[in-house]
Amino acid sequence: MTLPYYVPPEQLIKDRADFARKGIARGRSIVALEYVDGILLMGGNPSSALHKLSEIYDRIAFAGVGRYNEFETLRVAGIRYADLKGYSYNRTDVSAKGLANAYSQTVGQIFTHEVKPYEVEVLVAEVGDVPEDDRMYHVRFDGTLHDAHRFAALGGHDERLAERLAEGWRPGLDLAEAIRLAAVSIEAVEETEIPPEGWEAAVLDRTLGRRKFRRLRPDEIAAARAAGPGPDGPTASDEAEDG
Image 1 (cartoon, helix red, strand yellow):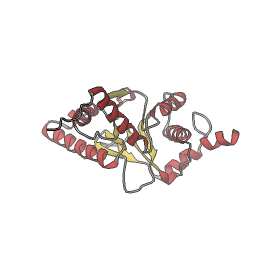
Image 2 (cartoon, helix red, strand yellow):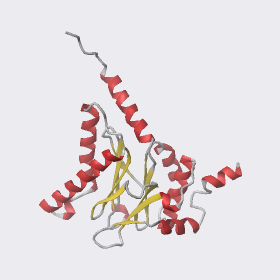
Image 3 (tube, helix red, strand yellow):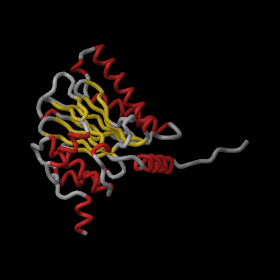
Image 4 (cartoon, helix red, strand yellow):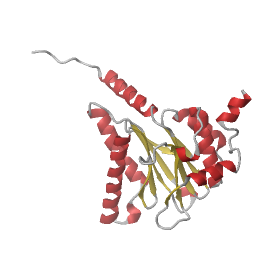
């Protein structure tokens, strides 16, 4: 009888983490940032059929990067979780924190026990009645859960994106300024220009009715970008011309 190969647990976890990171890095980045009326979620997405941003519940939104079929499975599971909890108890009992914890347990279990980990990172955002009640939770490929404040970045360039957002974010941004900051940061880090129709963007707007989620149209994005250079400086193309 042939004995199975032994792989040290440390090496196994490292190999799975490297595999997941490579898969996530092949996708387009997404940023989320707080503005005066809520939370903006925005990222490059050339496909009009496959959404990376979605409504989960009245005040809760979902964003995913990486392998589409895997984060779509998580999105659908999140909707079922929220619907069941809201129906069984009360709509106000459905929270981004509870959903993010459920995602963390699921993704962590898959990372530890399955042969192939999920090549995804997800963000769960919830808008409150006041800015102090806004919440964002970032779930990584290994199930690690981070409580994000002010802004969050997902994807292979998350650290550089977070640095760009930190330079440009300030309290009281309006929606147009938030759109410009998100777009300029992503274009600068990914070193590419994205046309208005190449973006996918949505907001959780606390000024709306019961359902706070709203998708932004390409003309809204174009108008916001045309209104100014962006709160954190010139675009990637401006920097290239200056260099």
